Image (cartoon, rainbow, N blue to C red; front, side, top):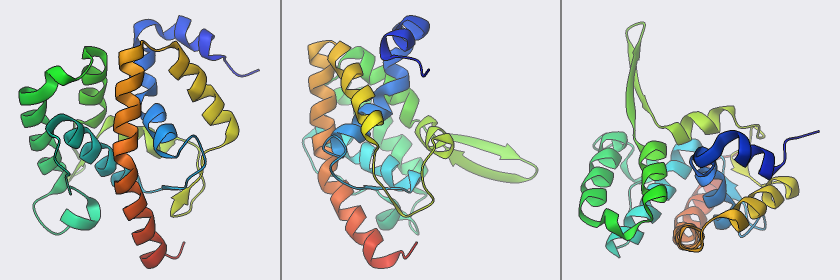
Length: 186
């Protein structure tokens, strides 16, 4: 029998939110499973970064794989923008959310066997999250129900901030899903 939300909370303690902020944001932006998401982790990563930056600054952002892929390395641009804006406006966020987002979104450089690449905890989580090999993704009812239960256990200001950021993500996700449906055929 799968572990319940309460059992996970007891096992993980205060780190429960760290493990679920990505799931919470994806569930909210999908309108609780009603809308399709991009199934490309770098694209979803940029959508989360854009929404967080817009929440902090009040200005729409356009960091993205489809916007910045051939320009300045977008991973470095994301780190710079997040660090700069968490420093200036980070007090707008619940401290738990700020810490979780910082951990989840920070791009780290990896070097192995002469190759170098960047990744974040979010992208690493997406690589191992069971999902279909298609260009878009729909969340399961079971997944959404578990996340709803987790959301109900959060402090009100934490839940509200997640909902606002998830809703800000919507325009970025909609734009990316449209781009993917037009340009990707898998």
